[in-house]
Image (cartoon, rainbow, N blue to C red; front, top):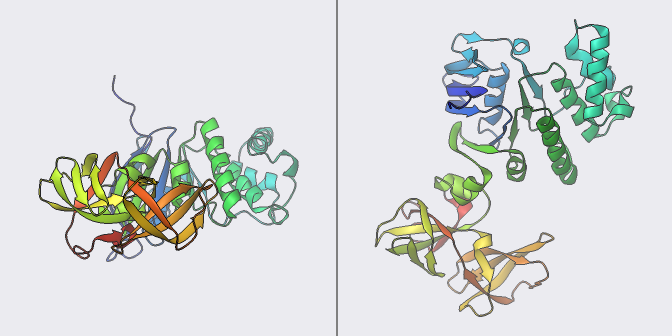
Length: 368
């Protein structure tokens, strides 16, 4: 049986506001029906420009975009946004302040019979939990209620695809996390396909079945949250995702590296070192385990309480610093010494070349 064709395809698109300096370069990916996708990257990486190209607000310099087999964009042709069957939820909600919640939701349904508009609006108010607020204006709503209204308005014309541009960034942390999951569940309940643009890793991972990491207009890696965290394909992704330290070592056998923190063993990826190769191994906080019987002793130099766990920055006698997650009931003060061991089930390994090659350890955020 042949697999179903993708709902959305981006094929080698290049776009931007100045043809001489494109913001997005040679970007390709596809999205299946019902998938939730995250585009993750820091400010200026091109993620919003890519989203605007899908929506029809930014023309292409090269490549093409198709939705359900229909060409949306190619050089010299951009199907107007209103004809794309693509809904968009903006960071600032973009609600009409003079219209009620009901009127905002119904705005994209002009031309339909009045009874059909009322029925759709009523159903969407129920879907997003705003049944009792339909006659209020946007300024009378909380941030979360405004975001639900914006989502309902985007869903009203029954689009094939929903795009969300940093939609929760104006909300406080707890509400952002809760509303993100609620919106994902709402879309999933309708069989919708969604693409979320965000700079927040936790948000991207909670939302996305697949996540694309963008940097300087290029797609550095596309994969599941698990693969991005545990199997980064290059040093940039390894440093951008999560936290950790690159520890210098020497390969002494297949899947075994000698380091200052002991012999590290596990399946090596993405680089397959040969015996004698100088390498760097990424050590994540969850790889560094408290162990009173271990010979590795370190001093606590920083601590960050995170509820269920405490993130400690530990300094070895050599000066190398590692991060470790301890259960939160283990309360260690700055300056106290603790014993740890490094336990790896797979090794994230890269050649030890370039800047910092002579250093025993380097924070992952400094290796690009």
